[in-house]
Amino acid sequence: MITKPLRKKGQEPWPAFYLITAIMVGTAVASTVALDFMNSRHGERSYLFRPLAITEAAAPREEAAKPEASPPVTEPGREAATGAKEKEASPKPGRRIRGYVALIVDDMGNSPEALDVILGLKEPVTISVLPYSSHGQEMAKIAHDNGLEVLLHLPLESLNNHETGTDTEGMIITAMSPDEIVGAFETDLARVPFADGVNNHMGSKFTADAGLMRTLLGPLKEKGLFFVDSRTTAQTVALDEALRMGVPAVKRDVFLDADADRGRIRGRLVELFKLARKKGRALGICHPYPETLEALRTGFRQFADYDLEVVPVSQLVRR
Image 1 (cartoon, rainbow, N blue to C red):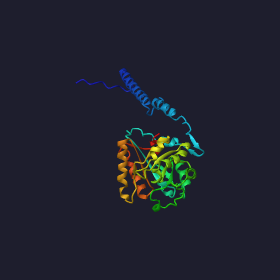
Image 2 (tube, rainbow, N blue to C red; image 1 turned 180 degrees about the horizontal axis):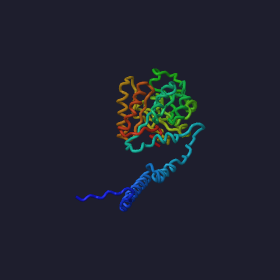
Image 3 (cartoon, rainbow, N blue to C red; image 1 turned 30 degrees about the vertical axis):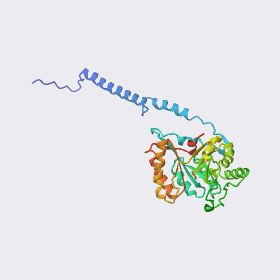
Image 4 (cartoon, rainbow, N blue to C red; image 1 turned 135 degrees about the vertical axis):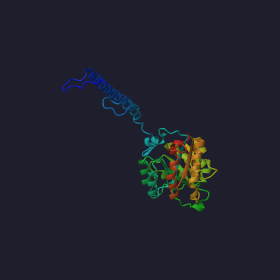
């Protein structure tokens, strides 16, 4: 049996040992540097190199962050949709958008608590404020400051005014002269700051008269406001007259809570979703009832399931 002689104490190791050790250490160092370099190219943490992917990605963000042109001001204190609203209307990254939905909450101005719930939705819901509501001006400002679109919820005469009450403050009735109609509109509008547009409160009688609607729509056009036909009657001519006069306008598609049966709200919300998928866009109107607000709070989770985007109502107007 052949045995290797033991290295005597103090004897130097075989010279090839140094070469092998040097190669192994060199290989490990080179691999570490190469891996660190690759991490830097992919924008990951690097100890030796500056991450290239991060610096390159910063360029488009800086370009996108250029200041936007100031929105047109039609009247002191009355701006068009803000940049914040436009940002809300942009599709979220990674989602395939198959339709757009706008939601208007009517009859706002009497319940600050309802506005708190709406703000908590973190969605670009549009609020429509009654001109003589108890907290209308304050709530319009809060909504505007939080990036929500605001409408004047304009009271117009209905066919059953004898039942709903003819003493609704700020109501414009069919017996008024053209000057009285314009004057009443101006007064109502002044009570809702930051209004971007108008939609009718009641109005089944008024909106069916083309001449009256032309008189009303004249000052809207002058001020650069848009009109939403709430369609409180099948005989309405409001949308047609608005578009004929060059006033940006849109009509309501679905009332979420038009009757006393609050149990149907969720079903109508689904109806709105399906209509938006079919047509590419749909407008729903509702009211600040507790059942409606709860349906919205839970229903917004379904927008992603339907590949829909919630937008301010101004994004749906026809011009």
